[in-house]
Image (cartoon, rainbow, N blue to C red; front, top):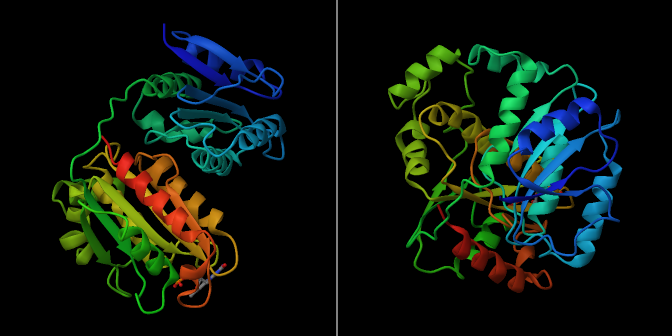
Length: 350
Ligand SMILES: Cc1cc2nc3c(=O)[nH]c(=O)nc-3n(C[C@H](O)[C@H](O)[C@H](O)COP(=O)(O)O)c2cc1C
């Protein structure tokens, strides 16, 4: 029987315990509830984070566990693959908490499959749209999705891709951008990959129009989109071909820049036709002052949780640099760049 490490800290309601029981019933379990019953080694494991959030959106024992893992080093989850079942006592916090859990554990080496989260808000209203697909009650959909999610942990047979196709998306200028300079440094440490860089120019990509589901499906089948343009002619085909996409994101008001966000929003039409689970994402995020984690969590939310791209260990390289070129002189940056390039080379798999 396959072994799952079930991290389920804090106060757990009967209804949440029941869903987790159904989701994990075919597996052998090692249950971790506090740092007291914490196994020494959580590397190379299959992990389910089953998290019930309090009224303020916290689960304090879970973050004590993360602190303990952090003390063990940034490779304390290396080789492990995880998914998350998360329940809130309100309509809020499931997504932001899932993003944070993924962000923290990914920095300790944990990888995530595409769509790695099943959320449940207080009255399960987040499953209402699924009732258009399944003739089931909300709680049955919740149980079904949680069960399928846990199964996903074992549906992986990753192999390194020989000469992978890498697509690098950015909207900055080489002359001034620290984010692009950092990418250039990473690129110097890569060789043999088939790298294509696409610059999303100002004004060339308008944001998603938000067509009806039916209209979007129609455009998707036509390999098109309401607005057409560079998105349809160049960016969609490039994303479709790529084994790996690297997102170069300067921090703009603690968020992804509007131009790149428009690309992500417009990918909705492509997502209806192409599954992204075999494609790997990486990112480089530079902030002038602080807040790179906000941008990285946004990427996790949009691309891993929502759009279903595979998240490899250490998927984000972050730095603080404001004046043009400053990033080159950050102490220790060469070592971090080299490691990031190695992670890229090692992790473009399907
Ligand atoms: C529109 C805009 C908004 C920005 N907002 C932030 C911010 O919220 N926080 C921050 O630390 N830096 C912010 N910055 C600074 C950039 O993150 C900084 O210049 C960094 O070097 C990355 O951008 P670059 O690749 O263009 O150099 C902002 C810059 C611009 C142009």
